[in-house]
Amino acid sequence: MDFGFIFSSALGELFSPTTAAYALAALGLAVHFGYSGLLNFGQAGFMAVGAYGFAISTLSFDAPFFLALIISILCSVIFAFILGIPTLRLRADYLAIVTIAAAEIVRYVVTTNQLTSVTGSANGLAAFENTFYAMNPFPEGSYMGMNNRDFFIRVVGWGLVIVCCVLVWLLMRSPWGRVLKGIREDENAVRSLGKNVYAYKMQALIIGGVLGALAGMIFTLPRGAVQPSNYGTELTFFLWTCLLLGGMATVLGPVIGAMIFWVVLSLTQSLLYGLIESGAVTWLTTVQAGQLRYILVGVALMLLMIFRPQGVFGNKKELAFA
Image 1: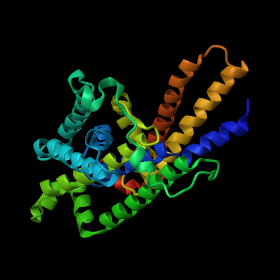
Image 2: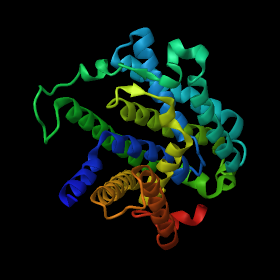
Image 3: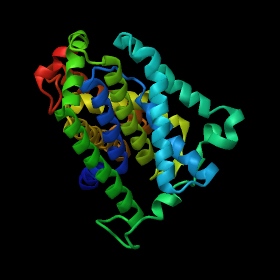
């Protein structure tokens, strides 16, 4: 078993485009739950809306990249309004129910056979990434062991993560962010001070949803295809795992959590596959190993919640609202 290859492959996940997408989406969840107290279990829906908004506008309307990007963001804003208008005046558990249902509705709508010409149904959409890679300033060649396309998507993805982290950090240090934290702790107290709690919640839902839409784009561009099966409820649960690993009410926590999540997931899979191929483990198949790695990650998450519930970078004081 080549341990050097296994560990190098795992470390390669640190800065993969998928990790960047998870970091962005988990940062959106931090805005929703960590700073605002909004229990969103439908972040996969925002990612799907962003990915499909970009792909459909590119393929069906031949939109240039930046116009498709704007359309994707607008779609996520509309989706946030649809979710927020009937639920943000109610308790948090109602929002949780609505968001998880809405994410599944989005996934089932795009698989409708009547919309095959637009959404591609269960097969999804492909070949929409050309407008993005047409902006690639890097000539053909090798960049840190990657070709110019892989290097470009990493630069864009992680550059976007850095920009969004700075923006969220500035927002949460502003008077607007302090009001959000107050709503998280006690919205009735904030309401008594004359603040429009409903409006602040809606703004937080929109901002976190936009981050999810951007994550959906980064998630799908390296694949060159968007498929509804990638946006199931398990994706949202993985994003919550990233958030909890790093810390709920932090800016860097979701990013570090996404890195840890993908490194651990890749490492456990490679180790299990290596043990099976070397004959050291004969009672396990590769299919079972793929499922076992999620079990191991789940056990690790439970231990984390027992011994460090605030996450790697979280603060115990921030758990008082949960």
